[in-house]
Length: 150
Image 1 (cartoon, helix red, strand yellow):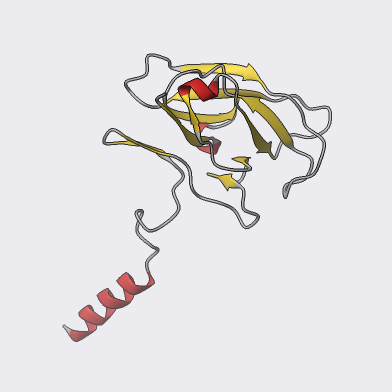
Image 2 (tube, helix red, strand yellow):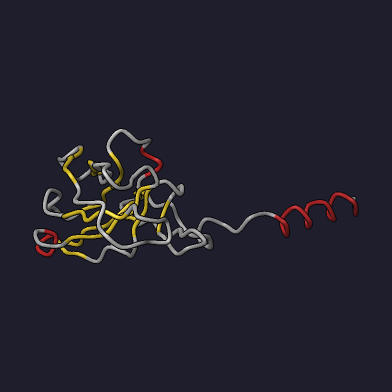
């Protein structure tokens, strides 16, 4: 019996942090949008290390009509165009997805190299929970952003 308890205690002590304690890849659950908060060793907000944000998105629906964010994309670089896709992951959104082109890559380095792109948020234009990523990439590579109501 003692051995079983010792094994159980060690298993719990050595297990990874709970979801509530660990950085999130983001998602939508129980009516709540949880933006991606996981960062890599270089401070890029990213779910898998393939696509990410240089900083958190703090925009309202009205702001999004004029706001741009900087994203980084590992498959990007000079001469490579990026088309982004935002998937509406909030069931209350009537929009399944929207696609548009990004500007770049922009000059200047990032921790990932010259792979930064300017992405306007106007095509989203609605409050809600969105998964933003490179068109054609696996959805899990995208980052979850929240556009606040105005």
